[in-house]
Image 1 (cartoon, rainbow, N blue to C red):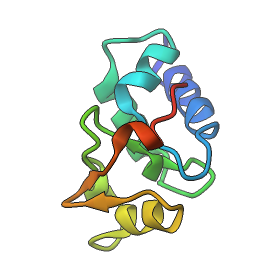
Image 2: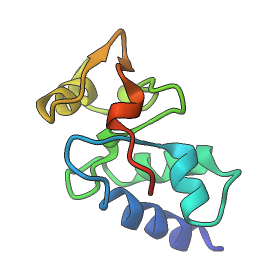
Image 3: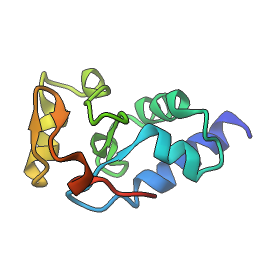
Length: 104
């Protein structure tokens, strides 16, 4: 699969994440048929420009850690966006992960 096609498939899944929910890089990779490519999902999200049309703030690592937060402008923008949707975050980690997790 070409990189551009891969990135587009990632964006299509991320756009489906419901407001107030989160998913993981690995869950997205699995959904698009590239189960061992979680890191590439992160690269795709970073390349998206992190605009709200691709809600990359809703994607965290498998433990709920906001590993992509340093790609957002401002120190806590990713956390602020999640909290504005009702997701509880403490110490850069989504609390009650299973309550917020969305399986693509």
